[in-house]
Length: 131
Image (cartoon, rainbow, N blue to C red; front, side, top):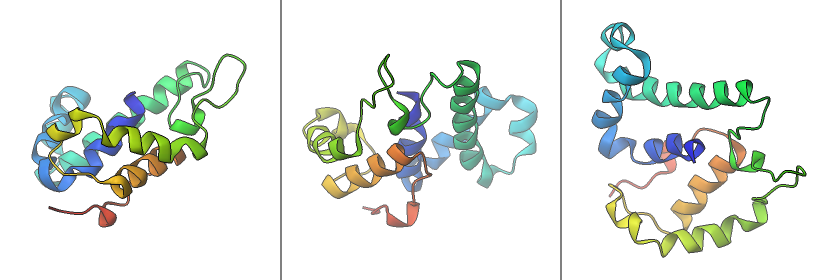
């Protein structure tokens, strides 16, 4: 689910951007890392991950989904209709792995992330609660 990674990084940006910034080195190389101001590295790392997803989409002729609405079965039928997002959010709330997330999430937080990931739009980090 590489398409979800940028959303998780954006959601947790206020708590873990220093770690996200370090991803830029293996993603973009030493030259780009050194040339990027420290305060911009996390944003650039997220942009590189999105670019990698776009590159995979292009290389596979659109078979690698960039967002949840592009996940389709062999016949082209959407596998994650927008109407299923509330059910997915409720299921995610019961997943114990969320306790390892740097920021707490409630139903509305899961929906916000899922709606952005479904559309393929960057997360509006102003809406992220900061606990």
